[in-house]
Image 1 (spheres, rainbow, N blue to C red):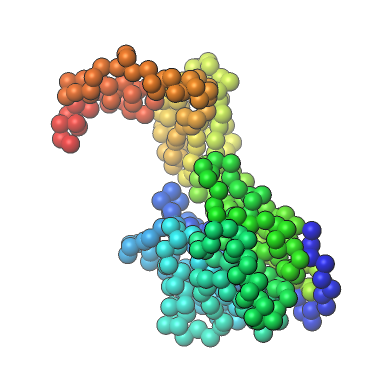
Image 2 (cartoon, rainbow, N blue to C red):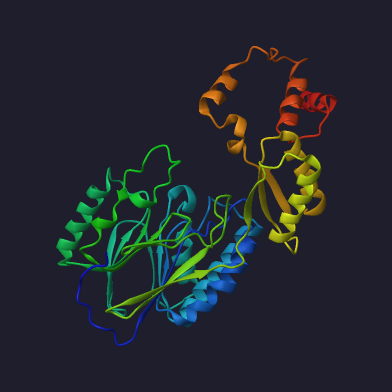
Length: 385
């Protein structure tokens, strides 16, 4: 439900670009690919916006000096230069610590060293801000806040708003979880798990969130999505959100990164004809990767022999694809009790020692369709360890 405030029309619309979860430095997708796509898709939008929200997880992990770091820093400085040229207000939010690791402090560092004059700020704690030039009030909620619940976190926000004499904010820029977006596979819920109704009465426009790698628009809360695909299970379109705020209404647009890395999962478990499945597989690859571009292909099939055959076909015909298979979809092991019995049934296994280990490793790899190494080769490798 959109907040029921009476808003006066703006003299000119406020144009906000909200993006997050670039994960620069990710080991699966080269930094140069993501950086080039940001230049092609995001940079052209900077000329038409007033405010850029970089909503956390710009980095994937702590990086040391390397070619990738030089590519990323070049992108960062060029982004700041273009924002300065068009006088774009820039706000950089701290994301998840295990990803950003404080590296987004490079934004204000390079902004100062390059003597750019536009308005830029890095936020790493709960912050209220009125941007006078844009006539808006913003609440910032970075990730990893030190509270035991979302209610405790928002109690602090209310105390701050009371001290400021504020009864509302126009926008919230945040990074974290709402309860309707919590993934089912998470073993335990995060402490600060927000609810949409907690923001309904006092946020006049939108809550712009990062952290979840998918688009979602629920009442006045939206998730930016990740800019590029970074793993299997992210087959949906990737990109960012453009908001045109007219004061008494707003238009939200999802801008797609159409060149996002392809992570494709093929479930071929219904096919058991070894001769036919190779033809079917190559035909599907030709449809999915017509230029034989780089990407990731994951196969679902219960037969280790067929999975190995498809691996060889991939390597021979599509050398730019990284092949994998999904063990969790093995129909013989879907029942957890079967899996537990399989893991506990060790009577048929020999006792591991110097003589039996090479054969055991060979048998395991062959069964999983991952290696053509002979027992002798494995023995030689083990001797060197």
